[in-house]
Length: 401
Image (cartoon, rainbow, N blue to C red):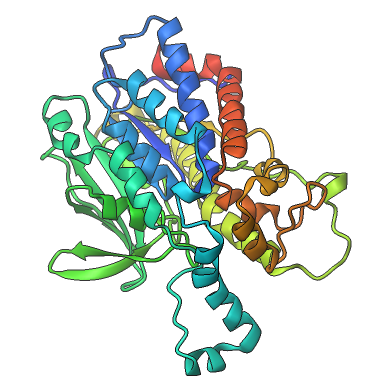
């Protein structure tokens, strides 16, 4: 059990949910376990355990859904869990064969006939997949019109959603919260106060190349945004800027991936497009979070060396961080469920090296982000629940339950 640092009398607690496409189902299982532990410990059930909620990519959707139910944490978790446990690919993107031809075939055409010929044919695809169904799912899952009232009633301090601007190259954190919260700006990233909308969630979760960019208003002009995990150098920073004294981080991938097991060892063959894309996605979604957690812990160690009098005269403060991340490789789990995807999706993914065979692990990392199918999401939720229960003592110490 890890010893947590002493906190202020009424510490501000933040929840940080990272990106990862379908991998975000893992976060839901962790939240279910936290809700159960909270009830068993007879905690103050009328108090929202996470007054500050920060989300990126698919984590932004979970974060927004949780924030919109800040007055009833258990009910909000149950609603999110019900959605993820019944998930199908066509809830997120158009997955029928005709749609695959309309969207995916354009990209495959460019790969096969070249960009110059594609330009001559006037092929200008915006994304590999059309995620129009996701908008309808969000209407039912995320009642954003409740946010301001929840903030006014004291159930929520802030909801922050991050996205990356293709237009400016800047990384933005849009937040809705208490009026006294201040804006911040750092190198290539800054905050903007704005009412959170469905477009912010669609922008933050727009996986590059896979889903289309989304236009958002930035002050007096419009910019196009994609997945918030891109160029996100400090995933924990928004929670800290919003006043968090302690942060619970739920990842969507192992913080330190072990070497592949015997079944996954390379055969020396040149990597497929799917393998390369999966590696790139892991870099986008996983690396920055692990590095930032290490950075915060190093800063905590440095602060501990500063005399109390000097520390109180500065803006430095210790941030208690608890991380819950998958204990198993999610790409290995995904390889068992690729055949659950609709035929049209499997056919298109097969063209870039993702096999439907359970014994073929190549490309499974790429599939793990797109496998919005209940057999996979339910297994990730079960893993999240189990991993959180295994850290029960740390969770209770973190909250003081």
